[in-house]
Image (cartoon, rainbow, N blue to C red):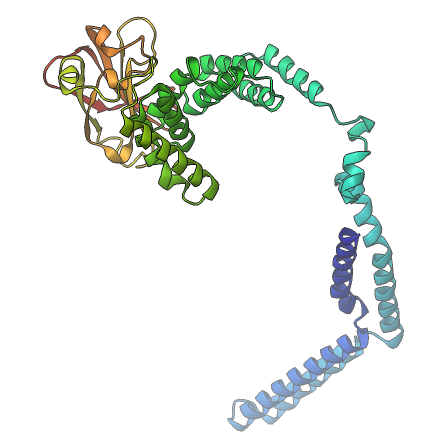
Length: 418
């Protein structure tokens, strides 16, 4: 009802704006025109008198010009619309206004029903509870939508957005095993994207009755290295390390998380409770669990298995990238899988920077940098923010590089990814 009231008010306003122009009397227009002609004639006569007094016109010339002026004025006055014409014009204006009063609402409503969405003017309960969908068909069920999505993925198995939607749909239906499979397939398509890794870990952990051991821990540890400031990654990484017995590492993750959730009292209270528990365990000297990883890598180990790199951006690309864009530094095997053996994530604003890639930045426990003698090292500015290379990214690589060799590897980001 409110919609139609507003519509009627708008149409009324439009008619009110047009009415004065349509109903304006022709006599007033004629009177205005006559008055203008008289004023012009008087001004011209005054000019003639001035020219006569100044001697520019003789008496004969003055009389002739005055007669011509009087004749022109009479001619203009004779051409005015008579009373019958004025009455007719006024009648036509009223007739036009009457037609518009009838036609404007009719045309407006008709066009709305043809081009608009008239079903949206019905009450919400009617639309949701019993109204048929377009074409008289009922809204599809969840099962039908899932079937349509799976059919779409069968036709286009490279549709990463479709796989993500399928995984989230299975999560909503509490089918965690199928959700885990969907996210695993998505991971094969997009690589180590933190959002995908965390979604996969969540599904896998729920399929294991909430247990983070095994695959979920591996995925979470990888995600937090790629996105060290992500709140979800920090929260889950702290839980993984706390369950594994790495209480100090869990504390460091949750302490980084705490200021990020200061505006969420419930989450902050939960983190404070987890921190208190982890600090108590760390103070009691509780041993680390069997699945734990070392909290830190010793300086000696780093010196013998790491690669020190210095990364900078080519002057050609400075000013073409934003300071907050993601920067990935990585080392990978010269042959075989392209998955990095070690990686770190920074921002363009950190350039130029020096850092060390070693086993502490390993992507997978079974694929460590120290297992290889020579590797390729590189750096890439990700325009999309994703870990997987995309067209338009900026990169620089150096190969081969001997693992554990003394000195610093200079990496200049000077190429555009095609």
